[in-house]
Figure (tube, rainbow, N blue to C red):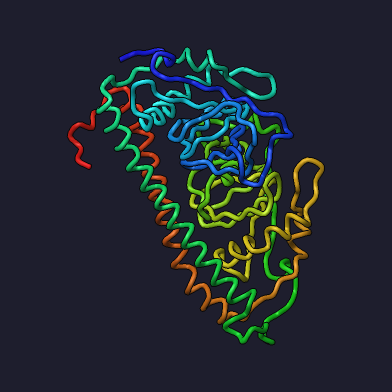
Length: 383
């Protein structure tokens, strides 16, 4: 049945208190501003306020209304809403369904976006949305529960992957930071040097102006944002592509390559699970005495140090020379082989879970519009 959103949803727009009312002592009201604390499912709070402005109740759907518009979440607690975010609550319907309904209709909302620097939408834009949804609340619940089951599986896979990566990091620290298998000392047979002694470090490239080479299809074009939004060590989804003419000015890497960001969000390692071109904001390693798994864990361990050594007036930049000259110890070949034998099965399990997450996300995103619109029914599904 078709509705205007204001017929079925109450909207509360955020309003920030004065700065003197903010605190980080975790007393007062949990405070959410903009989309900075939007995560996969529930937000976390770094800032609190002693004076309440606009409230969201536990279970409300919260949505960013500027820069960028349409990031969605659900709050598990009552909280104070700042500028840049709003809360939504069904008047007579299912809140979980509202979350998925807004995921579907957010593309319609983006068409109303305005603003010269930061895109934004206002209450009238949100209220003016026209939605076509099941009137029966029980149908709404069943649709929401079906989609929640997929999201719960995705979240579980993310938790498992995080645990597996922590295990691999713990092994790396034990072997190569604390040297526990070697009586707490660096073995004399290991070679001291700098990273450039053991690894060839090269930089990607970009055809310019890049707008002339972007396309809807062609060769994948890896952006830093493709890496920052995922927790997995592996990248298997890339949003943009470039045309074949751009290949002469860039670097094309095969699946299985390791890359490291060197600008914007520097020091972020990822292993490709998809062929792609990389721009000059990425470093890659065509020759290495270390495995990809070892280098990934190594870069994760030294990332804070690398960022501290970086420079840049707007963004921290990780220059190639910083990485080449970073003090590094090369273990013996037999030690590296034994270590890889322990961590490579862990990374294989992470990769399997990462690929399953992608499949589940594709299933959910395919079913979402059909379930919301009523094209597909879930009445026969047993939970």
